[in-house]
Length: 103
Image 1 (spheres, one colour):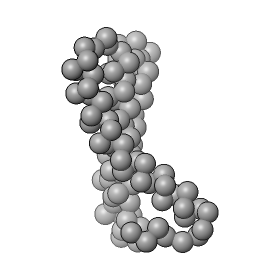
Image 2 (cartoon, rainbow, N blue to C red; image 1 turned 45 degrees about the vertical axis):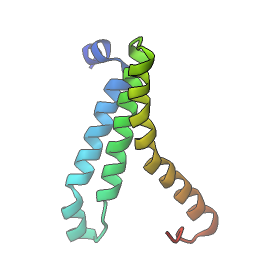
Image 3 (cartoon, one colour; image 1 turned 30 degrees about the horizontal axis):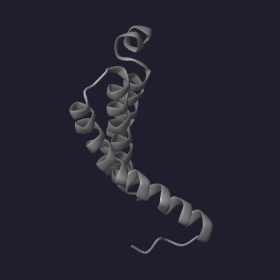
Image 4 (spheres, helix red, strand yellow; image 1 turned 135 degrees about the vertical axis):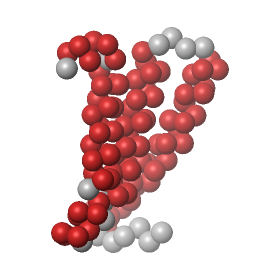
């Protein structure tokens, strides 16, 4: 593990682990539907999305990039962060009111 952290950096290594958890969660969806009737595919995709965002942030921090390359990496991070932001807003609304957001 130390070799991996030394080679890729802390953020990129953490993103690999988070993306692995997201893939496993997504693949366990049929089992969870059969056993406990809970659909966890969106949760798995959201965790995978968080892993991608952390990976791209790790790439940005690791290398000195020109402004064009930096803009090319910041754009997907912004787009991928929209579902994360919506999930945080939904969770805060749900915890405050006890009701679904209604969208």
